[in-house]
Structure formats: structure tokens, C-alpha cells
Length: 483
Image: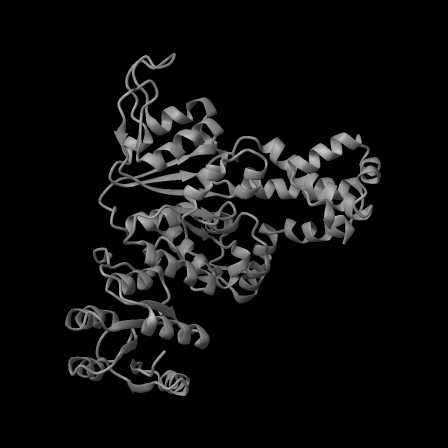
């Protein structure tokens, strides 16, 4: 990478100094200013090979300057930095032509890497840009949080807004997978079209193909008229396939054909229908594990997993809990519930909680606090009362009796049921819970017997052939027992 002239605009002197020193050591000529007017003058005079600009400056918003620079000098790349770390900021920066968006505080090594890419990666011959997003406050945004984990998601989403790429969203129940899907639609180029969601776990297996692709009159018993499927409803927009891991294999085959050929036929129909939809899929399950078990098609997985997005569980971004609490309390107030606040001790307790139900569980907690507690300031005692089972759940790890295991399992299942707001968990719960218990039990038994399957079978009270079958079905690595 050859030396370049880099223009830096930021009203924070410390940031200007750090960037000048770091980029100067790489051999670049760095010019810094605290205002947008000087930056615009330099750009107008044809100076600079790269621009790094803050958003909030004393004389002008840096985001408003970006399209003016791109209009005057389309080849000049711009890196936008901001402490206003929301999805909307990332989307606006991308839509207006920024090469990259970096949240503050930024990692200096990451910024240097972005600068190197900006100066070396060839320009694309064309770039799709979405229309400007609506002006929203953070409270109205679909996603809340300024943690590093959420910042990375914002940046990925911003890059995807102007595309039709298929996206696979993974994450535990309650992390907000549908919110991410809706954000991709609402801020993307298909936002004028419909957003249609279908939950595979909530539909009887025999009806999924009809629900997806529609059916013709008389195509099966009870089909008294033509039925419109979700693909047809989503034409010109986005189809969100939630809990894709619960889709039956026969429906997977038909979906794969749609993704490969771009068209489908209704159940009982003969004429192909062109599918003009963007596909976004989501699951809380491990699809690679399902592939190994023969429950999910590998070729379909690769068709859906074009752009993977993993949503972090709430315990991995506990610093976002205060912002989420404010958001949910504000929502409760709009619904007529009393608005509450949380003292610091209570907030610390919430940050230490493991949140098995993730953001959905937090939202439900806020509603209970708003509806059931008279005090305006919620203290740690109220939080302890609501989360009273959490310490016991940790204590049972040290227990060794049947009652301890039973109690821990009951607490885990209560959390699981509570996390499914407005309905029951997906069907197949019995087998799913048994698998969750079987796998670690067999792994620990193999470890205790150093991988000897005969001894492990005796320890478990199983026939050796039964153990072998379960090892295959659960894809257990027997070699782990030899370590």
C-alpha cells in the first residue's frame, strides 16, 4: 500500500491526535480538522485520497456531508465514525455512500485495517443504494443496544440493505431474530412490498406445503377453494421462514427447488409461478447437527446460509440491559402502565442474571414490574423476588441427588416456557428435552470409562448396540473419552 493523503474531521482533539500518529507511522500524510467546513474545502480543492469523518461536529452533521462529497468526487472513499451507535446510524452511513462505518470507541487496529482496505480494494463498477431511511429516534428502532456485539450486527445489516441476498439468522429463543428480519425488510429495497412470516414449528407438518405454496381447489380433502400460499402473499417483498430447522424433509425438497429455479407450483397445480421474494430464514437449532442426523438437507442449508448472522444471547451483551429496560418501560407507558425506573443495585443484579429467555424474558419482566409494583423506583429486593429461582439454579450444580437434578430440570423448563411469549414452545418438546439430557450423559459416561463403550453401556444400564446407535444418532465424538 503506497502512501496516501488522509483527511480526518473530528471535534475530539484526542481522536485527531491518535489517528494522525497511527496513520502517520504507516507513512501517510494525515491532515486533521475539527469542523466540516474545512473538510469540505479540502475536498472541493481536490485534496485527499481518503476521508475519515465524525458524525456530530460543531458546524454540520458528518452524515449530511457524505452525499455532497460523493456527488463532487464519487471515487473518494469515506469512513464514518460515530458515538451514536444505533442501527439507523449504520444504515444512513451506508446508504449515503460511506465505504465503512465504525462505532466509537473504535479499535485502532480495526480502523487501520479498514483504511488499508479503503486504499487498496478496487472500486465496484456499480453500487446499489437504498432510499434514505425514515428519521427515527432510538426508542423507535427495531433493535436496541450499543454493545460491540450489536455494533457488528448493525454493520452487517447496513451492508445487506441494498441487496437481495438470502440471510440465515441463528440465535437462542428470544434474541430477536424476527426483529432482525423485519429490519432487513423495512430498511431494504423491498420495503414497499409485503413482509410475510411463517413459523415452521407452529404449522402441522401435513399443511406446511399448502401454507407455503398454496393449493388448488380439490387438491386434497377439505380444499373447497383455491388457497393462496405465503410465497404468493410475499410477492415483491420478503418471506421470513422462522424455525426453518423444524421444516419436514419433503417440504425442504420443494423449497430447495424454488431457490434453485426461482419458481414453484401450488399443491395440485401444474403451471409454474415465478417467485419474486427475498428469503430470510431463522432457527435456534444447530442445523449442521440436524444435517448429520439426516433431518435437514445439506444442499438446502448452503442455499439458505448465504449470509449468516448470529444473534448473541443477552448474557453476552449485558451492557445493553439498561437501554433495553428504558425502551421496554417506555413501551409499557405508551400502553397505559405506570412508568418505572431501576436503582443501581437492581440493575447490577439484572446484569448478573443469565437470561435463559433472552430479550423476550427481559421484556416480560419489565411488564410485570410496571403492572404489579406500586413503587416508582424498583429496588434490588423486587428484582430478587422476580429472579428468586436463579441462585437456586446455580446451587443445584453442586447437588448430587435425584431431587437436585429434578429441580434443576424443572427450573430450566419453566424458563423455557416463560420465554415463549404469547404461546407454547414448538412441538416435539419431549424428544428435544430427552436429547439435551442424553447427549451430556453419554459423553460423561464415555469420558469416565476413557472411551470404552462396553463399560459405558454397563454404567448406563444399556445394551452395547443401543449405546452405539445413540452415539451415531447424537453424533457423539467417542475420542473425547480418551483425552
